[in-house]
Length: 182
Image (cartoon, rainbow, N blue to C red; front, side, top):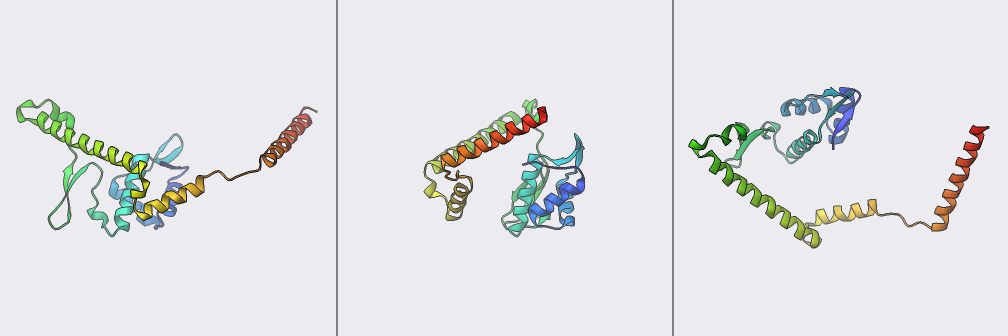
């Protein structure tokens, strides 16, 4: 979900409300992630990807993590034996590695791609299995699913009442059109 406003203040205010944090906290998080609120088409906004990263950072902090330990976008990270998160500079530039056959980068990249594809395939298979068998979801997620059913389920309505309402609206519309023509 992207977010936009007519001013930077509008966007920051929406973020304050969304995360339940102070204005300075919003600015600190934006600065930490390297995000700025730029004006595009008369609106200041953050993209879907930026919002997803802000959501992840918020969850990280809400779960007791420190912002300084959160891996910034585009950086590699590794968990140490002590459970600490260690960051390793900038992300890999795959374009720079592809033409360098002497160092064997192609094989390394292909192995990493195979591993990533395997993880994605496993994730898709597990997701499909859980969709078929939602009873395997943890209780908190089952409750969220049930809650969503209640919120989005259509409310039963008497067809005669609905028809009567539409007829009333149509007559009011015709009456207003007749008055405008006169």
